[in-house]
Length: 346
Ligand SMILES: *Cc1c(COP(=O)(O)O)cnc(C)c1O
Image (tube, rainbow, N blue to C red):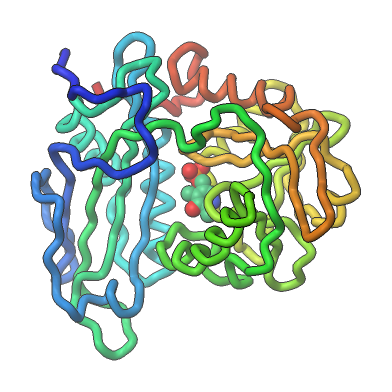
């Protein structure tokens, strides 16, 4: 099926919201989700007493749809996003939106907006943002009884404009997540409290903050919106783990770990001390997430101290480059998808 694409400058889109034709919406009331539907209304009207506005019951997801070389429109592991959103919802005492319905809603809303899916080779994607929030009235502190699940889509360019240019991070003086708190779920509240930290980091010339564990300030956790990966001198992929369950389970990171294993690269998932990073144990560092897959980190600053990653100081080092080209190859249909990760929409 061919649709006439919207008249956009696909190669030069930035990462910002642009209204498309349809969103998907379903409401939860009296203990059940309604059947859900597409809507052309991109606004939400709700009570001034809605739980989201007072006690921040909101969770979200992020994935992308894109066009492969053969012209198919696909997305990547939407079932993983569905499961993570269900886990996030459970942590905030919100109802779970069923996994199969989530995947079906993603397909429906992308299909309804095919004219907005960027063409193959443009570097752009259709960003898919599922979200769920409390619409029911709450004045005393308790979970609401009514919710809305919604999916908006918007065409976006690459998250990092500079392409494969290594970025600088700084070790944040702030904490991202409390031990055994909500750092491992995708909730807007984790981002509200990170805005001051990221604004200051940007003002100081850094792309992002690197957060240490807030219990001991000893271990590396992640950045504000991406998991961190390292490559050791012997080529092992080292993946930071949290003692306190405060790292967000990135789907990109979990996919890259599998890709590394498939490629015969040793993988070591363990707590990583910041002191070990400072000692120069790692030759490459990268940030991973849906938007950028992996972007290289060239330096991490902590006050006057600078940690340099020699094999990836300007652009991606060899291990990160191999991991990225393999994962993007699977995503684009140029490499075999042995794990059944690519989900065809049409
Ligand atoms: C969304 C997110 C990531 C990346 O997860 P992906 O599933 O790979 O997109 C990493 N860290 C945080 C804090 C996030 O919110």
